[in-house]
Length: 449
Picture 1 (cartoon, one colour):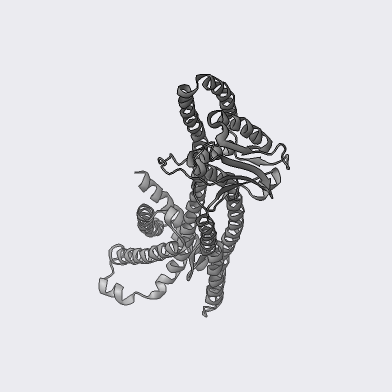
Picture 2 (cartoon, helix red, strand yellow):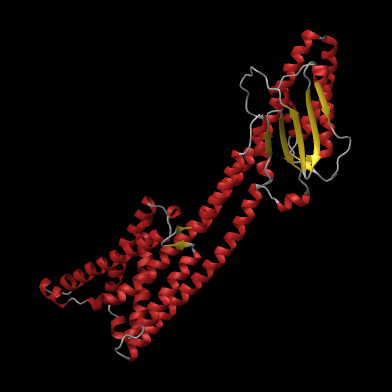
């Protein structure tokens, strides 16, 4: 019922517009305005054409969906709407002449001329293009907003999930060490438990932060290394700097703790063959290196360690965690971040939002100019057509209509970033392709520990 009422309202508006145009072209005819048949005929035409287009529009939205549309599909939909409108106009003329005015069908077909369809064609083309472009633009903006919300929510959830992995991972490894100490040395186990409580407090304090100062993390690494030496004694040798070079430097929280755990997990540790772990600050990076003496038998781990650190760095900067492995040494380089470098290298989410905002702002500006151009076209060209019809029989207005229309077409292609040869968003897709290729080359050069 609502659908029919909506069509009736639209039909009434269309009827008034067409009657206004008819009055402009043919002059004001007072006696016609008083005839119900005059209004009824126009309303009949408007209702049939509006009904057909509304049905077509509804089916298009149901089958294709405006959110999946592009300029090519919009152009095809507009063409379909034009064909449907002309077919509906022919049906209305057929009913009008043969039923309302009792004209013979053969006479109607013989007298039918293509000139009768010129004005409906022009009017329908303008309305159909404007109608479809409006809904396409609206769906495009809704889709962009929805995509940004999804990406923002996914990035936030992913970061929270990665941070939440730290707590159980750290606790699990620490309890394994404590379990071994209880059997081997109960007194040392008590000292270990006391130190563990202090370290665990630090873990709880830092785990919800995106970045922590390098000074805090180095201090924690010293405490944690002492805890590990309680277990391994002479089997571990640490080289940790007493002071840091850049007091503004920051890293992902608990990254050192995870790397130290990883190193011990994957290497043999004994007094006869001690594991040497070196931590040093070099050229904007924190280097964590160890002599390579892998365990012969290693159970498959949970995969948190290095993957967690790399994933969390990817969420706060475009600078990569680099991993280098030789026959004798394994080395991980963590990017040192500051407020300046973070601004220069924003997080993936921030960078996406910033780039998307600027890109969307520029696109909206271009599309606003296009719609302004389209509006001017829809006003001026009909006005020129009216002047042409009132002054001369030579249809000169076709020239500005086609010339301006062609320019409008190219303007729309640029505003909506569509190319008939390269497709939609080809520039953005090419940039993404190059970035992904570079990222793949960087990742394939990394080793695993």
